[in-house]
Image 1 (spheres, rainbow, N blue to C red):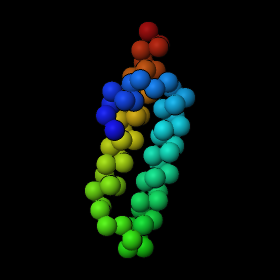
Image 2: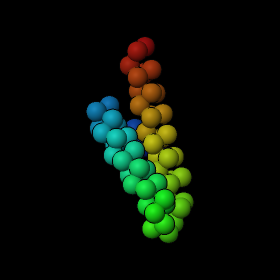
Image 3: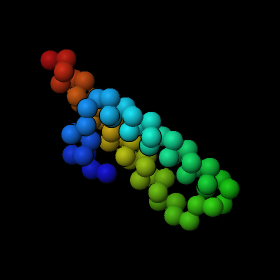
Length: 66
């Protein structure tokens, strides 16, 4: 997901999306541990999406504080 998609979300939506992505990351790690995950690049893609969402959320907090 691109950062521009996250920028159009509200703070509450971003929080919910981060929670959803963290749950997805947990499931991917679980599947990796049990040997059911075929594409391991999914893990790094989800981690990057979490970082993007948190970055946009922080940028909005800084902008609101001004």
